[in-house]
Length: 417
Image 1 (cartoon, rainbow, N blue to C red):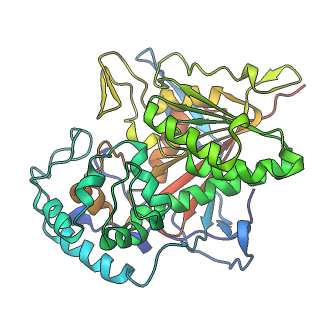
Image 2 (image 1 turned 90 degrees about the vertical axis):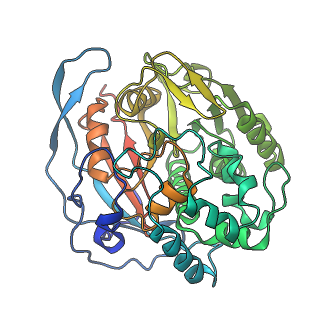
């Protein structure tokens, strides 16, 4: 576990009630809010805080994937961590850009605000007045819109100073400034920082790691971290399996692996990971310890927020998936991902927050990134419990100080001999 201290309160970053776009039911500020205490001045990977207060084990309803019945399920009381992150790209333009985002938000919602504004949109509505104004502010943003919602759209967010999109389009200077300073970009980079530190900590403790990255996209955070780990003799035999259905993203990931010089430690797998009966990525060929098979770490950092809790009869994901058969929702996907983790291993995933994300309205109504399902931490804990995670599993929740995402780490219990 990373260095413990205390957690922020969600009220510090609350979304105004009149602009609330949450759609999975009214959610009061979650009970993880409390008075913060303590200060952590430790530099580097230990800049994390955790609440001293613990909540009792929750008993929640677990809906089975294939039947309509329910059974009582519980999860261990989670530990909440404040993750101090100083973004390397944010600069003096941030206050000006934040003010402009507030102006765009004040233009109001395009269409019927009483409807679910996230899931029905499979493409960006360019008749939205706020989106049109954004285009005037950022002349080349329309070229970036063409990449949404594919993971390759995140490439410029991870490294804004590239100055160009993955398809070669050169961005105007103002667009680059926005990719450096908007909260969503900072949040994507801070959740990646959490993942890096968790992987580094696992390697410090266990040596070599077998990692599976589900819905990996171009896998920038995982590949950068694995490149660092593989330079250390203690973890030089580590490996990573990258799993995605988008061949373009996997090709980009393969190129990054080659750039980092770790191609021989990277396996790419083109696979739909939303099957109801498990994820068809066999860990047997990658890692085996004392007859117990599984990955040391399974991560799906940026995927849960695209899934509703329950299974879907059909699933459309613009330019990537258009299937007319049942697909796993967040509950079943988490169960299947957890099954890939070896005893003692770690499952890591994230979800955009609905209570602390100051620019949530901008993300959902102006940028219109499709399918996003922002959730409170309490809502995610319910999903974790419903997924049938072992009630003795350790659950840690990492909250970067920008308030955009929470990152969840679940430690699967070791098998008792």
